[in-house]
Image (cartoon, rainbow, N blue to C red; front, side):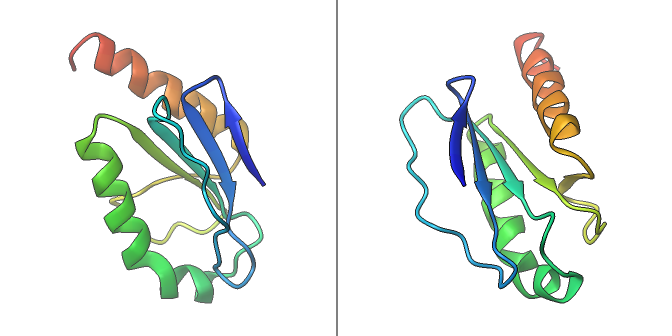
Length: 101
């Protein structure tokens, strides 16, 4: 899955093996949701450093990066248990950016 939602949010699926397909990123994409709901904790631990680096890169560009997972594996990453919470989190961060928080 690699879906553009709301024009500026890209949702992508991370496979059970921790693989990510090609991301079709347009100039308007500023927010990313990684669906890792099917990924085991062992695989998450294996790719955690890449996720942190990606998240820092997105954050430095005033975007949001949210991971959907039932595993809480790093306090520096935005991890939520459901896709709806991921969209809500991004919406809250966009409001904060508009208000310069």
